Image (tube, rainbow, N blue to C red; front, side, top):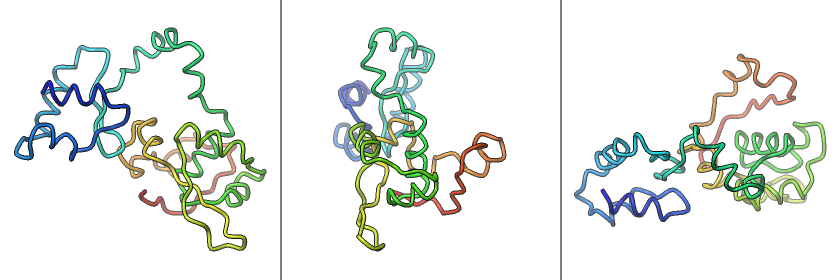
Length: 183
């Protein structure tokens, strides 16, 4: 247990099953081991969580204010503007998608700077070139996106129809009538 916890503690990104199996051996019941670690961490300020196809140690939400106070401005780089959040949402649900397609959905131009900020934060990456005229790049989410939002796969994204029914998307011009694709 200590070796798995140490690997998770040292890792900057979620650690996959294959890596952990190398640490404890292929015959080890990894899921049971993870459950035991989770139980041991129940009263700690951090927990073991599934994200991006692996596991990672994450701070519990109730300690967010203390972390923000300690990190100060460094944490602000992770905050998304409303435009960035909208573009990131469109990319997550429609990927691979071009800047032009995003602009058509939002009704306004999407700047290269906005795309670059999302890319620098490790939330999106370049996909393949689109077959449309000019062969523009498409954009997709990254494992960093999954980890940042605590998702194991894109299938864990909230259901758009349910969010619309709950009134969470009112005022947004987002009819994303396309299926979610797996990364």
